[in-house]
Image 1: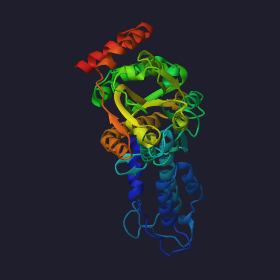
Image 2: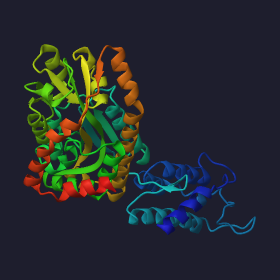
Image 3: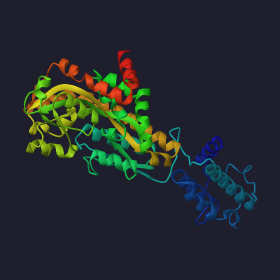
Length: 415
């Protein structure tokens, strides 16, 4: 690689002067044009310039050339020898590039690897106004910039490619390359350990756990289903919206409430006495409008972007669950990428995750205020009884999957 960079620096700095006595095309014109072609194209595009470079030094009207290869002024070059030297330089450069398995050029002190264009189709379930969509667009921008446009990201918001469960299934089949969703527990419930009721008391507690070894450990089993978790976007703390105030668990008795297709969510609300009804997020607004369900529970960002204040009267700050938003890539697709491209995609996913988190925290108070301005009433219940009533959810999870991971999380939260 060092030899490649050295030769490139020589090539970049090398400019041959015009050939004396002119001609419609000169060695300097051809060489310098080939140099620019190399700096903007791949070696395969550059090879024709080597093959077609005219033998200007053989031409009768070419006698003297000033170049880095010349000896002092007025020295006559061996014309065929000079052409051979130039061709050898260029050919050696391309061979070195090919042997290095990557095409490089010097740009801002960085080494960049062009490749055939790779397409990532990325689906998610939120509207274009939602912070989730803005975070995915940020991911797209990061990937395309870091890859110099060789990796293109196509974004499909608002369940355009199916429900979250259907999009995840598409990723397992590599029909879709990436998805941001909270519905991975259909493949392995251990990923939902972070959704245990009242597990975290702050965003920072949750992020410290997710971005460490526990986050990696919870994601590992999904590899068996061709799903690799790259980062955890933000979903946030979930709250109940309803047409009646929720001030204690008793107010949830018999309430038909929409939840995601998550066993922990279903178990939590069954424990609290409600009647949880899973359905696709895209169907929720209409279901609330028509009275198919009485209530729903979501983070503030989703409540705000979906305009649930139009069909619900109360925002009840139950904060019953924190829910991350895992971002997964098809493992088959992941293995088709070079290590260089894998680093770009993973680093961008992690940067976009923090970008999403910061957006949520920054905008949440503003969103609540706008919901109130639109007529939604905010209820802040005492959550102590909610916490007590949901303790059995922990026991069920521990009985199902062991208590090791739960205890690890609780220990890290205390530290």
